[in-house]
Length: 444
Image (tube, rainbow, N blue to C red; front, side):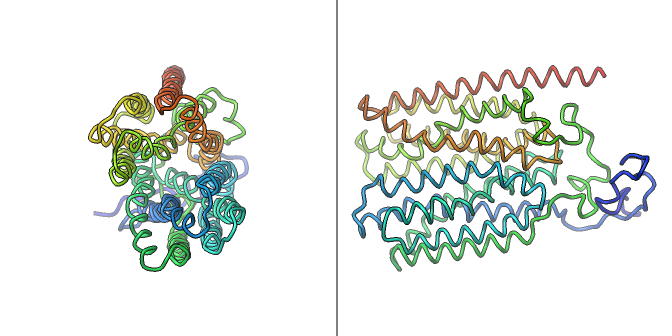
């Protein structure tokens, strides 16, 4: 039996000729046998997974280096944490830049340049002697490099899949959670053996090198290799709302885009509060340092499970119902954080929070692909990530201020829950809007 066939040989074959359209032109081009073997989209997933593993693994290891800096320089904790806050803000905001660059030039050159900058920034951080040096090396140079990680990787994977988009993005996104679990312990071992400077320099070289290698396997989309998404023998059906794909300029003032941005803004602004304050909160409750630190590990375990599960769930019931579920769970977690006082309950709450946070983050590229199409998804994901993600840098600071004012973390966690409740309300409105639009399109 012959292999299935596909109706075009390359992405250029889909460009409409003079006086015609893409559909009519594609019907008359040469038929070519589809290649056998592993679908190239899964190779792209593996490469994107690697980029996120090393990028976020190094990022979440920063706290391990802080104690070494404190011991050598005697800096205040605020002086060592400020560069990290600058770093988070800058790389999140730059998603609005790296997204369009990925759409225009493809992911390979964008990630390659970013990997070099990431290595330079983290590597130069091993040489600092003053706090302002760290603001520059980490807060600016390394952040420039990190901006090529989440948006270009997840947006590119979204282009390669439609039916299994949720699963593919979930596997990709889980690279960051696995890096969170595995890289910090490795860093701790290296610091014990070499000291924090050599450990940081070595990890910068290793992470940058692995990201450069992974970038070689990042391909823009299946059409550029003469394939369809999911390795299907025919092109995907146009989404009733998105159609073949719209530009950022076309969607940025539409109700779905503004609702989606508002949802993630309200959801992400308090999302770093547990990451930064949960261990201190646990110590305030009388737990030892090791037990308190284990709460952060529990968040990482839950995050890995949430990233993988949410993608599968989105492929099963749809991305918007999955989004409603994880936001509702995150509200419950913030309320529990405000009132739990036992280590076992803290672990459970932390794991559930990680599950909800990881799931919500994973759903953004799928939602953008479903709502706005594949053609310009990197620019759209990048803009949402920038607008909603950059303000998350102030969440831990506000939580610390509330703690200073009230003497406890209860108010901070309850305010976080209220913000997530507002995000859930917008998500319900988005679900209603999509249902109405889809129904109208179906009638047409």
